[in-house]
Image 1 (cartoon, rainbow, N blue to C red):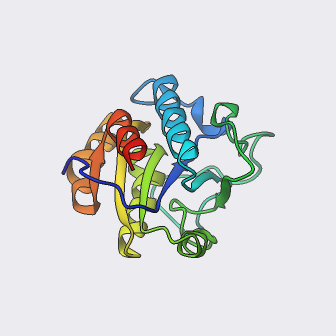
Image 2 (image 1 turned 60 degrees about the vertical axis):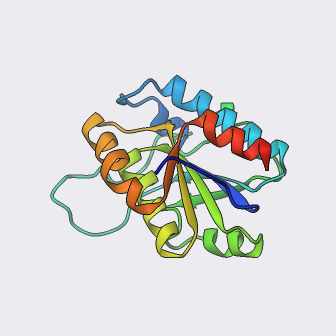
Image 3 (image 1 turned 90 degrees about the vertical axis):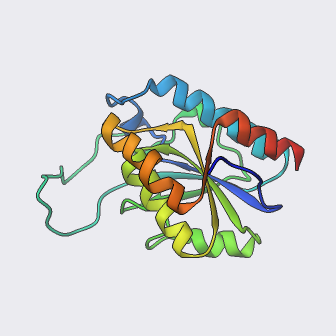
Length: 185
């Protein structure tokens, strides 16, 4: 369903826009994704709504069929990109799994702030964004997804999440639609 409204206390979650990831080949131009995330950040900050910047610094333990690089990450890999213009009021969450809620203080911080809805943007659509959205939905948050402020390494994974998964978890919208709702609140 296309986004219709935002709750009075909505937080923006920006997933994995960090130096080690934004340079990877993605399905959509990363410059466009970052520009849209920056627009959302501006809208949320102007209204004094919570902003959470999320980075990833590892992976969940366990076996999988796909090999995952383990070990040391290059210097600066987890650093948030400067375009996000981190503010002192932003909350930063470092995750070590796909989703931003597992083994972090994210749920507690959102609840303490009275947040009832999250808008999610970032990379990768089918991994960090989708995992975070699924968990937010399971925790009872209303979920909105800024579909033009996200991308994936795989166009197929991106499209699958947007067309099949996200409509089951919440509402989707463009950066412009969401920013207009934030401004009108």
